[in-house]
Image 1 (cartoon, rainbow, N blue to C red):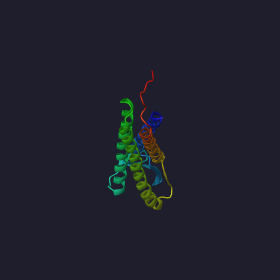
Image 2: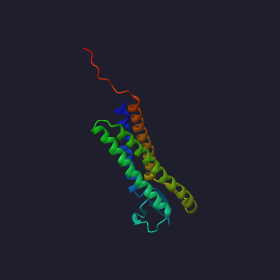
Image 3: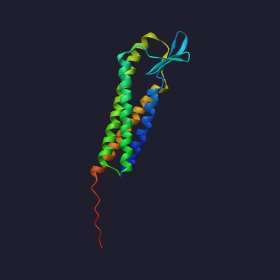
Image 4: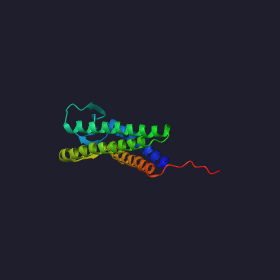
Length: 174
């Protein structure tokens, strides 16, 4: 049971890590019409008419969203590495628990990032542009949050199972 829970947690953690990286790196968090043409916006750049430009203004919500997403990626990476190292060295209780905590922390940090981005975007763009929508990369971020939380819960449940089970005895009757 331990290997199943910890393995499932590690597998969900790997999927969450990939999705967090894709979500953070792409420029498709939001799509809107700007001056009659289609525009995309991500955390790092905005694209109009297939030409991308770096964000030149420093706004607190951009910086906070970027920082929380990068911390979420790093935390998820740490959780996956701890989960994998628990299997390679024989399942170690502390590594499984620490990996689970790192994965739950990753989900929480990404949740903060997307909550900040959602609040500011709905408030700001909802008033300026009529035709806007969140794009695929933003939605992938929400899926990554769910996977990161699930991965952390699986690994923490695996840890609880190992601490609750009594150690097997090596009595041999001859």
